[in-house]
Image 1 (tube, helix red, strand yellow):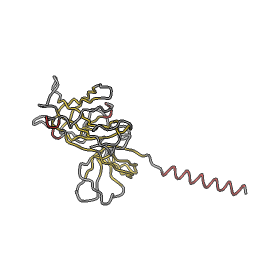
Image 2 (image 1 turned 90 degrees about the vertical axis):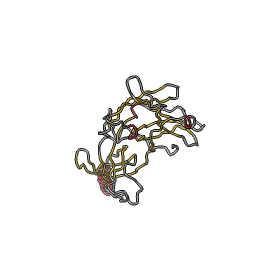
Image 3 (image 1 turned 30 degrees about the horizontal axis):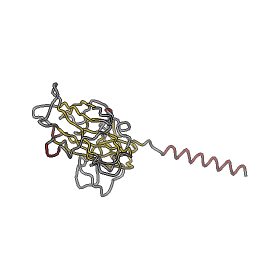
Image 4 (image 1 turned 180 degrees about the vertical axis):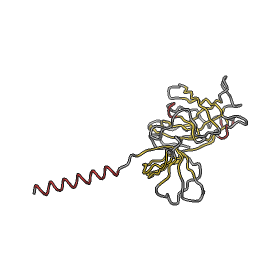
Length: 244
């Protein structure tokens, strides 16, 4: 009987060791879909840190379009080169993606000016988008999130274009802590005969403090950002479904 127990324990130990070797580290990152043929199932994902992910298995009948913004959960199965990786994908979630709005009298009230929490380390420029990973209080209503240019494209004294992050909570309850991710297309900020545009973003916090974040959008190098963008650090949550 003792021999049987010892043998059984030995087999279980071997199987457990095999399982550990097969489990690959899982990563999470933000990026953009890359599709050579729009109607085809094949695609890759260009992460905001410059890595390009190639799925090991085709995601059949997907509705992704070229340049769609997504959060991807994956494991690396093979390294093609320094910036190209074969991966197993566990989940892909759409990121709310919007254009930068021009503030006008007609949308002044509906655009809202409710507080929101954003850590300056969770703001980054990549893939022609300005991205925010944020936290807010809500309950049951859909919240509106926007980035706006002020009247007459207001600039700072040193020439930075002023943008404001706007949040309309739609008079929702504030009993649940929620999170969200949003990407804003920056192509509309391009200036003729210029290589880049410097921006300053103002964000109203929950204690009436104003966070000011400064960055630069380089037109001919869309992946360039002032900070390194890490797929495991920049994003630690899934986008909320209660945003628009």
